[in-house]
Image (tube, rainbow, N blue to C red; front, side):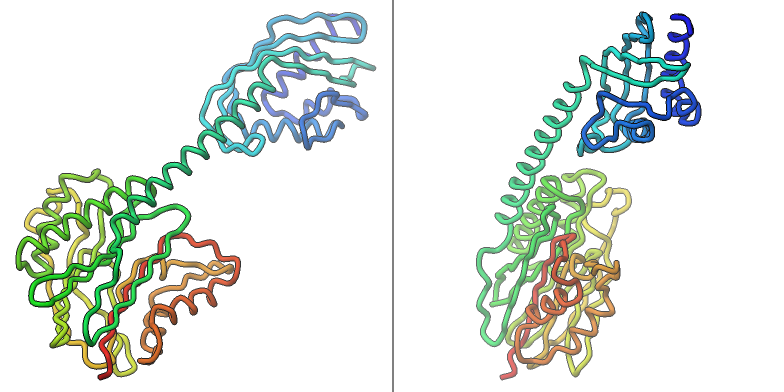
Length: 389
């Protein structure tokens, strides 16, 4: 073959590579083709080379590939090229897609034998730099995420109560177990006039710092409104909702259950802003504490005139109420099965008056999920139990 024939063969080969036309590439490659510049983990033979082309196509979107110069002498063709692509499809060297545009310039040498491409050597001014840049970007991103998680945890922990109130004749048992990716769970105890106690459990949508900030803001507003007046639970939620809607991003909201306990009588008055329904355990059954109300912080036009239904229940000797977040019911086991509301309700009903309801539920959760369970979301539980005597 002439020098021009060899250059034409290489140009067709590179064109077929750009189109990921493996059949056409295979026809132009010698059966014993050898790639002299394989990447880590790739095989140097023909099929290994073709697999590399497929993997690269699954990783980068090619914007352009330009042959800037070609020289042919003897059985070799030297091609100088420039390519532009975007890392937007799959992982590269373990790095998730960055969306960054990458430009690579390089030189490829092909040896032609019997009208087929028998060998390839390559060197580029962008390939190694690309790998190093992506690995460095991934390192910086990991450090940024870790720092954000630390900030979010500090905000979240600072907003949670430091002590559990002691109320004669009652046992109050909270548990807060954060997931690695910080969510917006919160709980609080608000000591009110006449020995009454406010109990709050809620969940701000989202993760990380935004959720932690919204959660912290909501906690502060609830305390301020509850302490500043003698408002009922429904009125407290209504006022917090009006204030919160103008102060949080439009795509975020907060679910929240707020109840007020009168310890001497066992009267528990409550309202609910779209949160998971608490359970009351009595007489071997678990009853839902139902009350209608939309989540806090939704857009003002949707919430105009919104009120929160208010109800009450009397907790007798030995009876208990459980407030919780969705991290418990939405936990999955290794088979993908969800812990679920029916299971939780049955367990609350099953638990006797002896021992901690919170510890009992967490033991059942760990038994359900198994040893290698990776917690998906924050888990918050608050159990309120009246003493038998």
